[in-house]
Amino acid sequence: MDEYVAELSAANISQDIVKLLTRMTNNIEKALSLASEQWFIDLYLQTVSLMKSVMKSTVFIEIIRLLKLIDTKEKESILFKFINIWFKDVLYALTSKKNFISFQSQINILELHAEKLGVQGIADAIELLEKGYIRRQANVSLNLVLQEMFIQMQKNIYLVAL
Image (cartoon, rainbow, N blue to C red; front, side):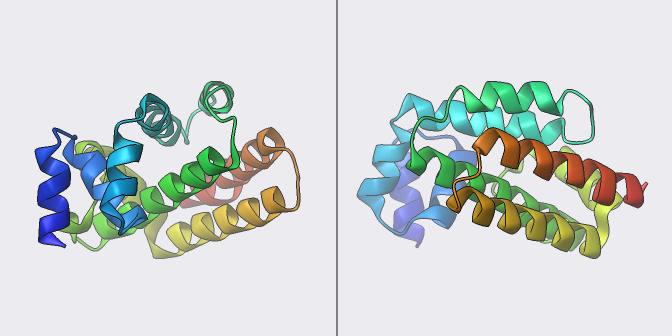
């Protein structure tokens, strides 16, 4: 694993992207290929913007921006992986396992989410994400899936946590 991380780091890839790739794939060629794709970097950056605004009304603007980047099933799958890793990072922030966090550059936001959500809120968010992924596999519109998922997160998880 250390060689894998070293090879990705040597390719001049940001540490957040390196950590994400190590959690997403064990194939170094696939990881290097993804890291060299501009759409992958754009999807990562837009996902960060989306997750930073999850507690705000601007989340729906971020969803629209995100949808413009997704034109294949592979990109959809990666989006769901990014969001899943985000919430797992929130759990790591809650349990003070900061060295496991992939979104290191967002640690302050992750800690804020952890403080608001607690273990149950994080579990509920991951469950909503899994249900959204299943709905998308059943051919429900990605736009609808994301909007409903984030409305439910805001209403039933984040507002309850406040």
